[in-house]
Image (cartoon, rainbow, N blue to C red; front, side):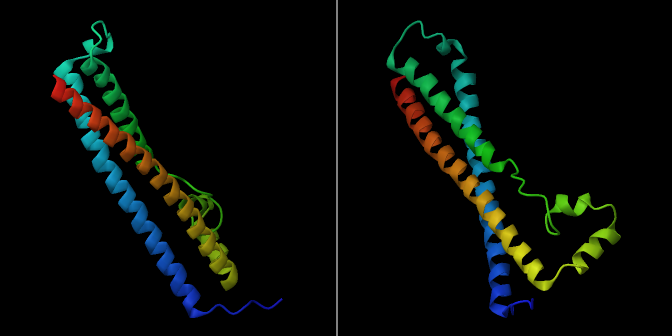
Length: 165
């Protein structure tokens, strides 16, 4: 069966899509790293300034309730930000993924596998790889959204705590 013609605009699209996905994943990682640092700083401030005596909740007052709430939300926000940064390894098959390449017994085998792949198969593999990157990017942004939502609520509770103390 003859290979379908692959037009130049398809190649340009895949190249653009790959660059786009990588840029957005790097942006998510950068945002998460900054937010995790800020959130961790707030948690460290709460623990350093108030200690952990407030965990006991012997004298229940609004600020004593808000400290664990804000700390819990900030901790969830920091943990979610960390989940953004954690590498997401997709399918390690084919000729693109670094683990799939490293599985080869030699550089010669890798070269042979690449040279033995048709143009259509290569293009399909590039498209599949972009799909995997898009799924990874979507997961990163889901965790980033959770992180920011919990962090904003945690900071709001912490600011109210500071007003009452």
